[in-house]
Amino acid sequence: MTDLFQDGFSKFQRMPCMAHTLQLAVKDALKVPSASNVLSKARSIVHAIRKSSVANERMIQRCGRTLIRDCPTRWNSSFEMIKRLIETRPTLNEILEELGIDTLLSSEWTKLENLMKLLEPFATHTDQLQTDSQSLSEVVPALLNLEAHLQQTTNMEKQTVQVLLRSMRQHFAGILDPTHAKFDPTAGAASLMDPSVSLALTSPEMKQLKREAEIFVLDQALRYSQTSATMTDNACELPSTSGGTNKTLQKYSFLATKIFSTTTNQVNPVDNSGSAVHEMQKYLDEVKRDNIGVRPLEYWQGRVPVYPKLAPVAIDLVCAPASQAFVERIFSVCGQLSSGLRNRMTTSLEQRVFLKVNRKFCY
Image 1 (cartoon, rainbow, N blue to C red):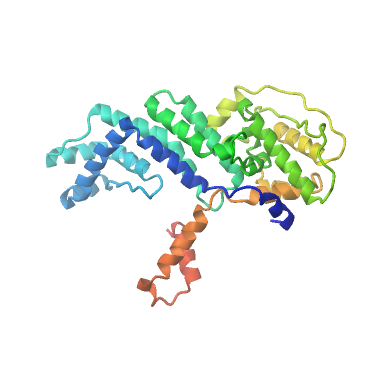
Image 2 (image 1 turned 120 degrees about the horizontal axis):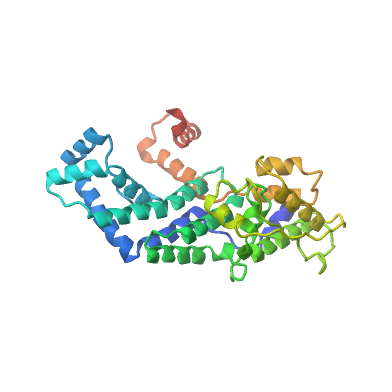
């Protein structure tokens, strides 16, 4: 990141870890009585099976799996516990009957299935946001996709859905709500400058966020080019775009359904000034018109001659990571591998961390 661009960010507060914040919203929803009661019963069954060597052995022999116990500090663990219970339900019920342990009622199994459907998109996006390959530009589309999922949900516990939706909006108000006291347009600007997800900001309720993102990018472009010109009233009349049959939001099915069914075509104003505003309008027209399949970094590296003012800003934005989770995990692994229990190992710490983090590719 350039020193000038970094100075431009200095007035904004440090954003929280997106994956962690998303899990905080999920925890709020799981405290709703209708959800917490059935989860409490599910945990008691898991505990009864896990503490019995006989029950565990029978589970592994009959279905090749055992139950998963959730943990408050492990992301998605409640979802994984519910999923495993539902997957092994026939075998589990047989073993519980043999051991004389009560299983869940049919209505409680239905509640678990609905809860699994409700949490599955959250588990998917949490897994994506905590990787090292996810850009900051993916945060706003992921949040909007989850909101659309909750708004389209009809067969779940209404109170749980409402609490989850309200908690998400509270936790992420600093990213999605331009009127919030701690609003930071950086994530919105990153999404705007990512051609693969920029259409996420074209829904009617995102109009103000899109405008703030454009102003932020144009302001950084002016700072980067070291010009003393300020944006006039005409320059602040920023262009707006609309969705279409574009394929750029295939990854966010709930959001795409919502956007493409509500947006309408609008005529963009013409700006022949050759300024950053003109480049912004040209870029948004290109995104709306074309199905851009390349990665955002590759796109902007190849568009530097076309967008000389916007490209440096866009490259910095799309290179920012979505969360700090991956880096924190690396630090945690380093701490584990350099503890006193492993002080006689001869392999270098770098090699051990590399193998630990990439172990899934070794099998």
